[in-house]
Image (cartoon, helix red, strand yellow):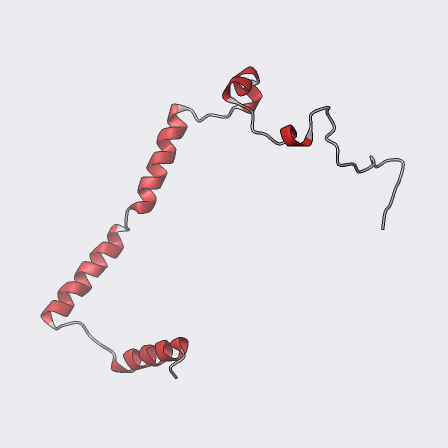
Length: 102
């Protein structure tokens, strides 16, 4: 099906400019990019530092979580961690069902 109206440009395989299709989609070289400042985007030093800090923050675990894990680990070592056997059994059963053994 083809729809042609006077307001829509006809479809063609040729690029709008005189470049061949092989060169129309090439990334500009650094020399070409430096001639056109609008084609180059760089972060300021503050932006670069912020990006590095964001990555470092994502890698850091939450101190509250670390404290809770340490507390549970200490309770397990001393034998004082309360274990709800019904919850444990239901979690084991759910795991068996998910794995397809049930």
